[in-house]
Length: 395
Image (cartoon, rainbow, N blue to C red; front, side, top):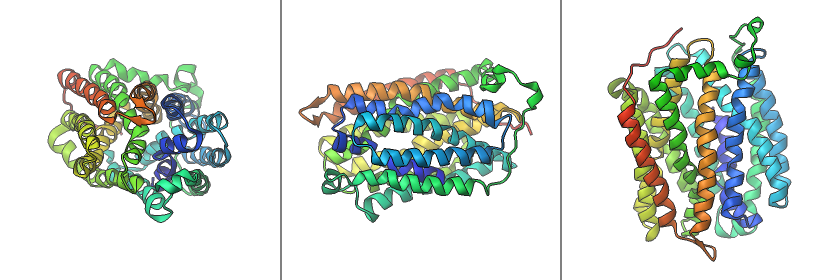
């Protein structure tokens, strides 16, 4: 988990700043680059359902995908313009996104009570993301204004390539996680993960699935714009400060089992959605006068934003999937969150960012108001339609 999320955090956070400084990318081009994550997430269930649940050990597939990722990350490091960079980042995310479902599947298969134990495993992914940001900001100082102007952020891709190679090797030492689906029972529907669609017959899970898609539209604004936003308004060590969000994630990851047991899955998910609304409002007003307290508070809310919706959602999905199709179900929820929802979100974020861009300066108040309002609507609809349930596991 540490290596998995170190790799992602070491280049994805600063991608928007890198593209603007090195390739003079527009908001639309930046959105296009970020949307490769979504295309990877959309393809992920096909890879997981066709391979991981049927033919090969999950840890071996994880090793192969990260080895391919190391090569592609090095090619991203060498790219000289956006046209050359884009195919490499697209291919990389197609290889990387399935690994998110794989690491979850490997973890869930080894745990006896995932609702209580998974957060203590997943928290190391958060630590990896934090360390990556601190290395960039306080170790190598690649995100200072002078360093960004000189192209120092290009080195984040080289670091990612090295760490991807390391994880590919390490993956071969993970606990054996063989397929759980009988190969003799092959069907096209099962192979591409469509068997997990039966979960949508449950009205509650359908509401959760649709909410997952919709809430990721405003989520895309944060991933795409947080680093450029803080850099443009003159925040020092922006990448390092953004790790405050992951630090809070560690705290709330450890608190998540308590919230799930005491308040239930519905209230936990609603708190996650509410945090997104509050965060964007704080960014809108904090950016107006560069009010550090509002900005830091908004960043610190990431722990609730991510853990209470996405991690608890993974646990809820795993409990609904049953023993045989956990990998396919995780792939399906990855498609819903990082795939369809964020694909629309990155497109919207790029268009709105360009709309409020005047001579290279952005009206960040207007840019952040849009995702705040959208997240509020999704939260209200979810509160009205989702019924609280008790998480139970089929072993």
